[in-house]
Amino acid sequence: MEGGGAYSLIPMLELFLYIIVMAITPGPNTILSMANASKVGLRKGITLNLGMLVGIIAVTVIAFFSSAFFYSVLPEAERILKAFAFIYLVFLAFKMLRSGNVEGGEESTGFVSGMLLQLINVKVYLLAFTAISAYIMPLFNSGIKVFFISLLVPLLCFLSGLVWAIGGSILNRAYSSYRKFFSWLFCLSLLWCALRMVS
Image (cartoon, rainbow, N blue to C red; front, side, top):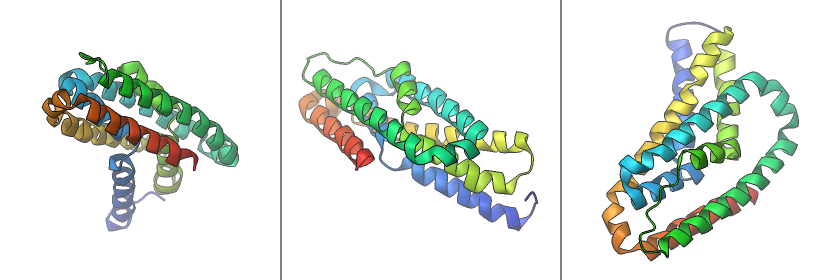
């Protein structure tokens, strides 16, 4: 239903609220953004966030073109995505732990890692599919409008990741002094995300 005025403003506010809450709450993206920026600083760490942005755009485009089909196979697809995401998060957790135990382990988690995480991140798929099918498609009849409004998903996710990365960059000096502690903290946080994903 396309229309102007206050009637369509409320669903748009609900859409914004849904995306912001889903994007800003702790999960693989936010924790990895914070951990990476705390290790290498915001300037070097931004490549991870740019990779995440490209991955989220890809997921949003997939969600846009296949919403109806994906929802019909969601239970099976969700299990497969969760299995891949679990394995990848465990890999990232131990990679983070290993880098904290090596003096000078200041290597940034990069663009490709950020992008790949999105392609198996169940939270991002559910966010994109729900935003498009439950909020955006009912509001607009035009496929072009639905597509462009759908791009709010990657934009708001990117901004949320930056908020966490800025927080991580503030912790950068503390990370240098307490490398092992932060490596264990971030490792356990990612393992927690992985376990929550499959429970």
